[in-house]
Image (cartoon, rainbow, N blue to C red):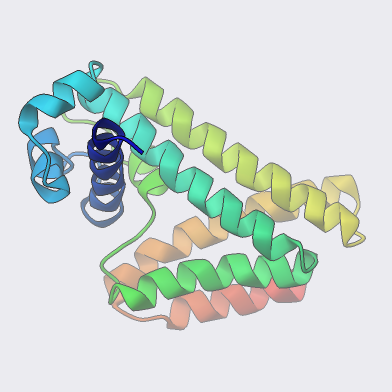
Length: 187
């Protein structure tokens, strides 16, 4: 790994963390660079597309990390994999004392103040589709019909992404646990 790629990777990781904690509009290049301990000029070198490019890469990084974890969890079977997927998000909430959510969701729900974030929305949509598709395959393998599995996969992603802000607002894991219990019962 070169020093150049290390700086670039640190910036992308910092942007992903900022999105997860503060949202799209609060994720500025200047603050991201500060948190990544990188020189400001490196941003323009590594991200000539500016904040749009940085946010897309940060969202794709976060989405890929969750996808890898989901894939690893699903190797134990659909039920164990889905329980692992739920545990991942539960742990994120608890480990951060409800201060961190999902960077993909941050991009999906927050409209930029000054412009349209179509590339960011497209990246988030692609990630959600990948999670749903992988869950759908696992649910079919678990014995659900393709139609039921598609609906359950969408429900799983939507429920998890929806309960995260509820838990953050209430500073409680109880809503998550109630939702997770119902989701597992459906599977």
